[in-house]
Amino acid sequence: MFTFTSSGSLLRLLIVVLVCFELGLAAATTNAAAAAASPVQNDTTGSVTGFNTLGSLYDGNKRFRNTAGKRSVVKRLVEEAPSFMFLGCTDNRLTPASIFQAPVGSIITQNNIGNQYSKKDVSTDAAITYAIEDLGVQHIIVLGHYGCKGVSRAITGSKKRSSISEWIAPIANFYKRERRAEVVKFRDSRMPRRGLPKGITDPPSNDEEGYRAFVEENVKQTVKALREDSILAKAYQLGAKTNAKEMQYEVYVHGFVFDETTGTVADLKVSFGPPGKPIPSVPFTAAAAAKNLHTRKASFNKGKILSKPKYIHD
Ligand SMILES: [Zn+2]
Image 1 (cartoon, rainbow, N blue to C red):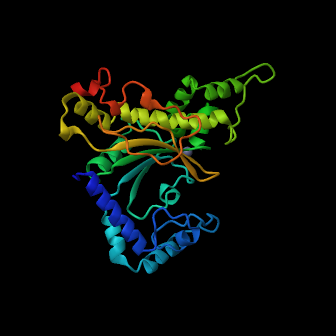
Image 2: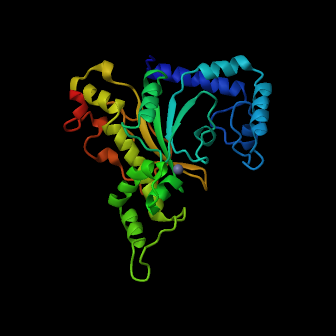
Image 3: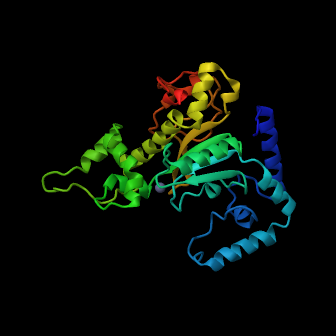
């Protein structure tokens, strides 16, 4: 189990940054050429065209092994405890390691269609518990993306029963009851009406305001589920109630959304963390219409306890 202090975190950050520079890999670089030449980073500038055989994988790994001459440095990087966990979507366009130009070993990811979380999903719940307890991550980032096909499918609905329709059912149900103005307008515009008895059943286009708004709300819904019913919820509620330090993980959860057309990542302003501790500043711009859930009741940041936390009595 790791313990983190701000100075310890700073030291770790400094070490990672120094090591990144040693490899010529400034983690935040936007220099495409540097990224392409990097031995241990994903090439975000390349096309998937041509990278479609097992041979391409083999060649890529060979380049990785050959160019990562400073193996001991790479080894050190890999052995560094990751600070970030991403709970993202299965979509191939959503690869946090590329989007954030993250060095090898610096992040862990758990993906599912529509970046959902439920305590009933043992795989995701176990991954989050592992990330917190065994790997000592400090930030869990729920990362949605505009144009999400999982969300689109939940919107269009499907009469055909499949594992996908079963998986996205919570998103489909959430869509039916979401009350954000843009989503309501969008939903109404797709309803059956005279001359269009089935309503609009085509997938929405990626730039439709209501669709984008619902992608954002879906991310917020996942953050909300983590805040209300997860290992963190349990720990933070107990921590707030008993002030038991040992029950408080220093882990912050954030909701971000990625725009694949611009590469921009926006903050949805739904971060939460341990009771009474300030949320570290989030440098990403807030999504245009993001509502700030921090002002709502039951914010852990204010050290409040949710009403009737059922799992305290488990
Ligand atoms: Zn998606």
